[in-house]
Length: 351
Image (cartoon, one colour):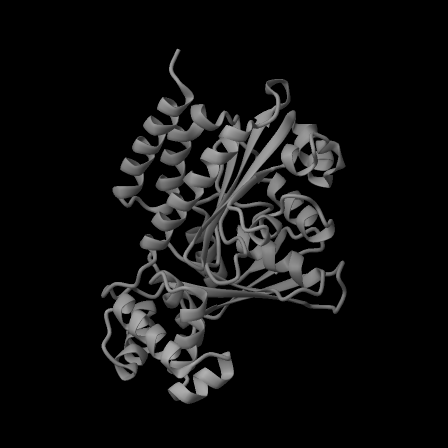
């Protein structure tokens, strides 16, 4: 019988081979799932890319699940204060958790388990955040059939190791380079979702955006980020998220209620990301710590070392140490060079 430790070592080795090859996110998820199926013991998985700054879901991918269930998942996430939401896992300081562990072996107390998982025949769910050095790059939900029991502690430990490695790989896919990406479509683009968040209408630009973001996989005709911002608009939550096209262009999707009614139609407007919206993405792409990101943002805004120290409550020498680290990670040598690199270069790349 193969020892568990040997299984984990072999699994991590195979996963590292997949991640080192740097495939597009869609292939990275599919190949990672193939490698992890036996070691984590799941029967279905739903993968997501996130807006790396806010953590809001921007894509949905699954070979086992009916993606029409994604709409219910968003609704449950915005309606119930449930266990093991991606936000709660992140707030706990861990990278992954299971419903069975979080509920002390009583998954039925979870609304998500009662309303979605159990009706589909699943007895437990393991959720993982693919975070890396301040960037919230993606996440996934792994489901196990009811007859197979709950996820074990050793499987959860492995998932936490795996989550960090996938997070770093996703971050590396987004490190800015010197490519000039072509414009996807003429923007802004506009789509309208009905009361049930089904796509009602879309202009030519929105149709092109939807085709690019989903490759034909939609939920009621709408891509994942449209559904996310629409649900948030209906709940009175900030309804704006970044999303990256297959060509590497960063867009922003924002939703608003057309009739000022939560049960009415919602307009989703897609625009090209501005330099101000791209700078935070660039900072997390380079692996800056949260504190370094704060210092860098103030430096980009033209604030002096003394001003930054006063605003962040730290010594000036500490600010200077952070700046040295920021310059090293971004490949720049001065504040002026940092500003040019983060704003000018990254905005040019997005066009």
